[in-house]
Image 1 (spheres, rainbow, N blue to C red):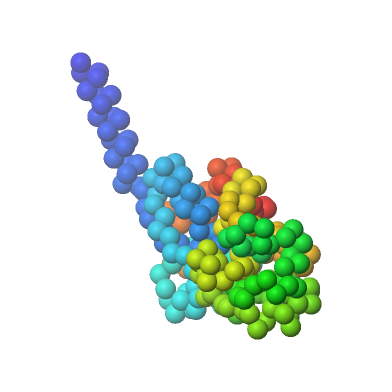
Image 2 (image 1 turned 60 degrees about the vertical axis):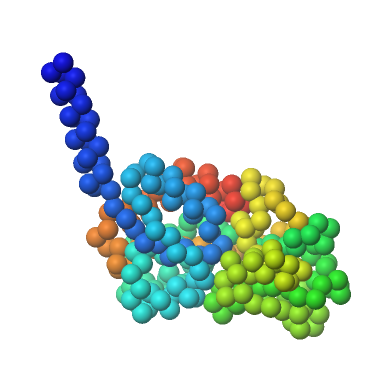
Length: 250
């Protein structure tokens, strides 16, 4: 009996210590990475006890907020340029930046048989509005503009453009059919290699600059154990499986 009580209190003590050591990290997450990061955060909490508080939005908007002392500890950007710029400006912990995913761009319609497998719909008059993310704020929007230019469809497409603040808002425009089609992140419309709804063209990567997405520890996270743990977790096998299931490369 005494031994059982000792074992009970030893276990309780261990659980208490684990709970006491668990922390919280505030993370700025590029909108295209919403679904995978929600899964990763859940697994991260189950495996480590640490909790990740997630904020989703455009990378350009997060850059401005971080410049103005927003209390984010970690940034998961939609590009590699923004974290590098923040590092040069002394707003990150040097040596913590790495590529956590390489994104894919897709032209998507909620309706079946609208978008063909070569994107020829962009040359047609079968749509009134085309949604893209703001090219000045969102890397996926800049990639979309590059594709439009490479295909030479500006004259047909530009008068029909509607812009979302982020790729998340762009997805909403298309999913609510306020725009018949638009450029989104493949991760928003696919899972395990399948388009989940509607019709899509996965844009060849040679039509735009690679969408390398970098993570970095911000100055606010320097002494935050949960922030360090999250960056390590993102490079582990569990996170990698989740990331790849949404169509990202590593």
